[in-house]
Image (cartoon, rainbow, N blue to C red; front, side, top):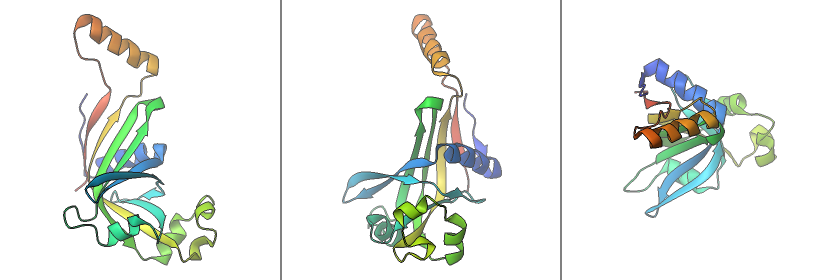
Length: 171
């Protein structure tokens, strides 16, 4: 069933889906190629911005600061949880935020594995993705229910119930 969400409801849906999954593939276009790398979502704020830590020495920082001539600093975040049949695609623009306060808010024990110098590690950069649009697919049914829905569709020539899906209009 198609369910689109607007404004605050869209942000709530984005937060609930992404924070449950936590890990995404952070996707950019570099030299005409689609490039993805795994990232851990640290926070989704009240405006729907998605926050990460990254190393200052990565392509992510260069892309977030300058982008390229054709694509700027546009990114796509792809979340997937096949066990719960939940998928989320978020498009937005990336930027580096110089904020000691934000580092403090986002810091957690697991971050120390990547940044042994802690919150004051000179390599630590705060990356914000300002969400422009998002789409989701969410089927809370078990795999068995999804399987039987697909089997029924094959037998009857109908389309299976794929659960809820729609757009999250944040702006």
